Amino acid sequence: MPRLSEVTAALDALWPPALAEGWDAVGTVAGDPDAGIRRVLFAVDPVQEIVDEAVQLGADLLVTHHPLYLRGTTTVAAGSFKGRAVHTLIKNDVALHVAHTNADKADPGVSDALAGALGLRVEGPLVPDPADPAGRRGLGRVCALDHPLTLRELAARAAERLPATAQGIRVAGDPDATIRTLAVSGGSGDSLFDDVRAAGVDAFLTADLRHHPASEARAHTPLALLDAAHWATEWPWCELAAAQLDEISDREGWGLRVHVSRTVTDPWTAHAASHRAPLTTFGAPN
Image (cartoon, rainbow, N blue to C red):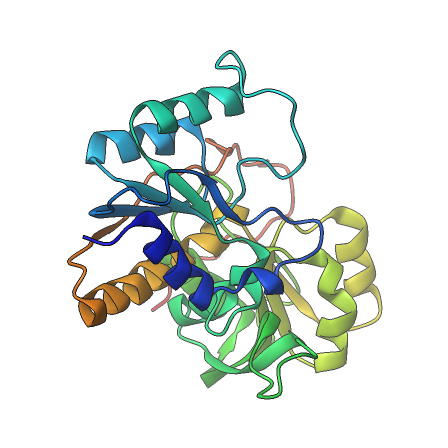
């Protein structure tokens, strides 16, 4: 049985902490380095619902994409939302490890998993890591479709293949426009519009697009936009990460049992359509 320190060392080799942004908080949040690890659960969010799922599963390690504490804190009192999660983890001997922007930039990383879920061919990073001589690491991915799709068809494919959420897929652009190339970025992506324009792609699929950046991006170019739920664009990474750890476990003879949470932790739970608005609803793909 591997120790926590051995498993987290393997995870850090997959997603080196040095790749994380300076403001980020990655690595091990809770856990005894000498504790034995038998079962691991991957999830996007370290919310109480996921912590409880890890306990019920009998997991010794919970690996999440989002940090529990992104900024400093002075308390882990159980009366607070995050403090309660810490107490539950420690009381039940469940370690917590976070891979956030280091997993975004890794090769393969979060956006590779997103591209894979959508059946896209990755051609390279959208924002290359200047420290990577191979030119494979970085934020986002520039992708190509094996066969052109209309924006309508691409949106329907995204709605079908990404996990279902209340938001679904919001679209900006001509539904009949032909899409051959696109950029994708798991999580919030509207800070990358300059890089998307420089890439010369037909479309950009990401999450959390805000009104003004989206309006400006559409004002002077035919760039099509597809805005999915933040959680939905990052969840495919959990399956990729679990497969990577499974491979390491087999190679090292660890015998780990690796699981992926399918609990939807997107905060939005319902969607009420505005029937008076001139909206186009894209149906399922043929």
